[in-house]
Every structure is written in C-alpha cells, then in structure tokens.
Length: 397
Image (cartoon, rainbow, N blue to C red; front, side, top):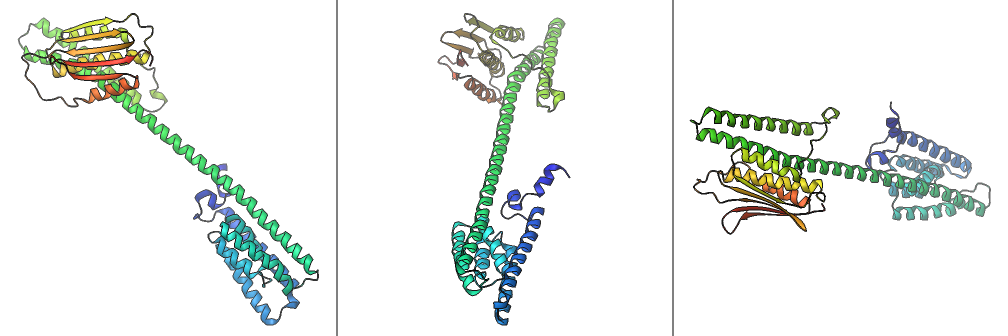
C-alpha cells in the first residue's frame, strides 16, 4: 500500500469525505478505544460506589449506564443529543461516568455552541450532585474540585482537537479551491489557444484557398487558353495547394499533445512581409495597388506587425471572395498610430453570387485580434460604394 493511501486511512472520515462520511480505519480504532475507556472508567466508579447502591439503585444505575454507553455509537452525527444524554445520566449513574466523559470530549469536538453550553451546565450538576449521592471517602469540596478539574481538562482537550481539525479542514478547502482555480485557468488557456488556432487557420487557409479558387475559376473561364498560360496557372495552384498542406500540417502539430509534437514555432509575419503578400495576390491575377508610408519599423512590436499583416490578408481574401475582378488598394501609414486600410473597389459588371460558407467569421476573428492589440477595426461600405476595411493600431502593444 502506498504512503499517501496509508495516510488517508489514518485520517478521520470527516476530514476525508465530510460529516456524512463512512467510518475510516482510524475511526474504528478510536471507537473501540473510546468504548474501552468508557467501560473502564464506568466500572471503576461503579465499583468504588458499589456498597452505597441498593439493589434497585444498582439495577437502574447499570441500565442507564449501558444506555449511555450504547449512545456513544451515534456521537459523531448527534454530538449534542448524545452529550446531553450521557452527561445527564452520569449525574446519578456511576456506570455512566465513563460515557459521560467521552461525551464531554465529543461535545467540545463536534457539538454546536448551544449544545456545548448545555453539556457544560450538566457537567456543573454532575460535579456538585454526584458527590452528594455517592461519597468516595474524600471531603465534598475535594470531590467537587477533582471532578471540575477532570471535566475541564477533558473539555479543553476536545476544544484543542476541534481547533486543529478546523485548521485541517480550512487547509483542505483552500487546496480544493486552488485546484479548481488552476483547473479553470488551464481551461481558459486551452480555450484561448483554440481561438488563436481558429483565427490562424482562417487567416492563413482562407487566403490560400481563395487563391486556389481564383486560379481554378480562371481555368474554367478560359478553357481555350494557351498551354503556357494553363501550365502557369496550374503551377500557381500546385504551389498554393502545397502551402495549404504545410499550414495544415503545422496546425495539426500544434493540436497534437505530448512531447513528440513539440516543434519550433513558425516565425510570425511582420510589417515587412506585407509587400510579399501583395505580390503573391497580384501574381494570382488580382489588381492590387500598395502604398506603405511608415518611417521604419523599429517601434513596431511583434503583435503589431502580425496584426497589421492579418488585416491586409483578410482584406485581400474578402476582396477575392466577394468582389472578384475588382481592384484593391492597400495603404499602410504611420503617425501617432498605425493605420492599415484595404479598400475593395465597387465591382462593375459582376453578378452577385451566393455568400460563401463562413462569410463574416473572418471579420469577427480579426476584430478580436485587433482588440487584443489595443486597436480599433472598422469595416463597411464607403460613401462611393467601395468596401473599406480599416484598422487603427497603437505602436506600443
């Protein structure tokens, strides 16, 4: 048996599982000892006062003492009732003196405030009345003092054990709360990581897939295109598909658990990579103009650069999905705050189609990303009918 398991068996059931817990191994041992102590004290006091009992008084004494002894079995859940019964019986029953002392200790340990007051009052009657009924040879004052000191010692011991037990319970509750808080923090961290991965999947994969769709649409629109153009478009599609597979492999690697999946994280995009993103989209056939007016990027944090890149990426992706063939203007300007703007010109002569699956989800995720960076995101039709996506970001994020 392991050491932690052995230690649990030595704890009271109340400390392990609460007040309604079953008796532990320690509880059974304590119960046996308490019964033996109660019987030993009761028999000793009864033997000391044997000659002062009549036959009827002896029978009553033994009957009441046995009842008080049996009542100790329920002393844990009914500390107040058992305390009042056993201590009250010990006022006139010599055999109940042992169960009475055990009940005094139990009342101090488990009883309510009102129950403890009742038991203390009954103890006062015991130490003053019992010596009047049965004399042990000492003077009345001596017997009262001895009884009071013995009762006070037992009651004080019970209060000390109560304080220690309450401290242990408080420590256990504190440990449980700490475990629950830790579990909550882990769950929140996992949820935040899932949202981050979802945003990355949308930002990256949607961009790649939209490129695939654009090239495939061009091949479908011009089935009689020259073989060289078809080969060029097929090469772009193959490169985009390879990029999609690589991105999926990286995301799946992040989702896997265990040390085997721990690989270096791919470098995140920055402000300096926005022109490469524009060139990639322009090579796929989208008319894009780009103007970057930022005096250096030394003040741009990693979060700022990544957020600005994702804004441009989402704007270009939405332009290809919702306004194919329309021109797009990308502007990145720096001042007191970094402003990233993607304007999709109003399409001319393009028939409206069915909304793509998940339309709008990217803007929701992008708004969360911009808010995390401390910025603001605006999107919607402009006065001239163009669709404007604008993010305003602070330099320090």
